[in-house]
Image 1 (cartoon, rainbow, N blue to C red):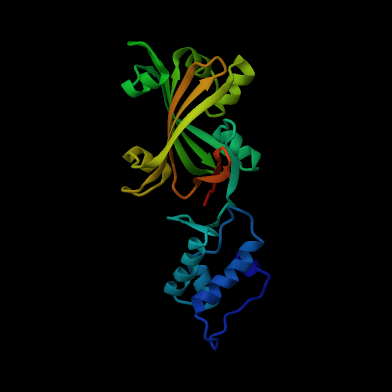
Image 2: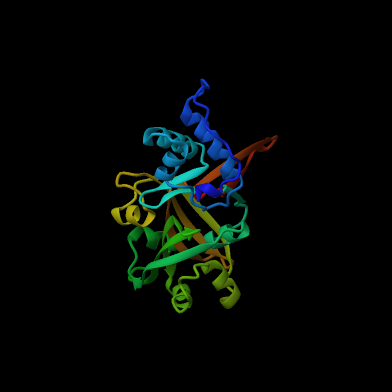
Length: 264
């Protein structure tokens, strides 16, 4: 692979600039013409091609990681990062919609699907009477085959009965409800914080134990004003972020919230 690189850049051992900085700059030029998700040469290939030590190669690659240009995946290699995408959250946008609008390939893995008695906080959020069942679904949301989010959703039973018969791997529940059942998710409230993932979530998100995640709790309300879903989202900390712009007006501040999905 490395022999096909066409810029012909070489290292200059007589320059005062450290070799790992020179290698970083060479790799930056190559990355500029590569596609997101494309794999770079292995460490050994870089060492052999540029006659460098493993320490020098690792230093150069770590600088690229720090700049967000590449990601290192244990046992798989070094890959060009996807460019961050930003979506205005003035409306309710599902994960699949956010990815598809930016040309990214989203996929889903269903981990759990069952009707059950909800935890008391969920019952309160959905304003359900005692002994009312809900439909619970746990999904891993992927972009370009990288796990970005573990989403645990509790749906009002009548809505869950509509969804459980659908292909859960499609993932776009909001679109399914709107297109096939005429149910529109119109409002949502969210609480965003830093959370500690469970051991299962760490495994699903490919995070080491002790990691922290971006945690989002959401209650979604349909056009009739009825709470339909209480969901809990654990996002990979390097692949999703919210950005808030604030604008001051005579009547007080106005905020615009955006979500950025970054896969690396």
